[in-house]
Amino acid sequence: MSILAMPSDVVAQTDALFSQYYETPTYYNPAAAGQTDFLRIRGGSRMQWVGVKHAPTTFMLTGDMPFKVGNKRIGVGAVLQQESIGLYDNLGVALQGGYRFKALKGELTAAISVGFLDKKFKGSEVYIPDDDDFHESTDDAIPRTDVHGTSIDLGLGVFYTHRRFWAGLSALHLNSPTVTFSSDAGTSSDGSVNESAKNFEFQAGRTLYFMAGSNIAVKNTLFEVIPSMIVASDFTFTTAEVTARLRYNKFLIGGVGYRWDDAVTLHLGAEIKGFYLGYAYDYPTSAIAKVSSGSHEVFVGYSLKLDLSDKNKNKHKSIRIM
Image (cartoon, rainbow, N blue to C red; front, side, top):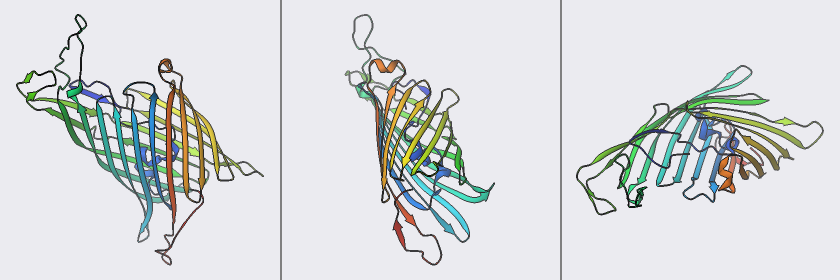
């Protein structure tokens, strides 16, 4: 989620909190890249707070895979996010790389991500009414022309996998990237003349993420219980979500979740021959329920089995599930 109005110097949460976070772990942790033996692709869209004008709409695409360099196991990935919220258009792109090694009867991965943030603000569409006579007012802290800026974005993460569970800890926007907007001199939307250029800043705050989950087979049945959780904090705002899903015959998935002080979530999904389709609905439990019917997410994906053995370097086959 981003912000709707921008003062001259502001820190804001940059990442969307997807209800289907368990399907896109690399979005929150670069060390999750290459954790499976598959080329894994996921794409999705989140329409937040349907019914609220200028509410966030987010598109996300991730891809990751493992490979070997000699005897070393490496995970690589890429993340792309595009978000529209109010007068903002935000784009984030990152490349990820991590090293995997055996530890504590499982595997531990340490990774970094390097990318950039690209932000646009449609200052030419700003309208600030005056409380007294409803004529348009001005605010020196808000650009009155369209502005644009970019900044380098860095992240770190560790991810642990065991045959019974997985967990990861990451820090995104580690360098607290600052995007500087410069409004050029010229004519603004109300016809007035800007005599000099002004600078405005957007600062993406450092954000910590903790994720964990497990697959628990129900004895003598075709069912699996899949609990998971995520905690996010930018040191000003903290939120958490817990999810409990049930998978049947490694095919159909259903479940429910709860995001702290925000929403109850419904989860549906299906996996077949490497393809994944998922849907999540958030019903708000906060005051936003008075003006919004909730939020919707749709995810699609594909997983391709990779044979990393030396004897079969180029032979791949698709698989039924992740």
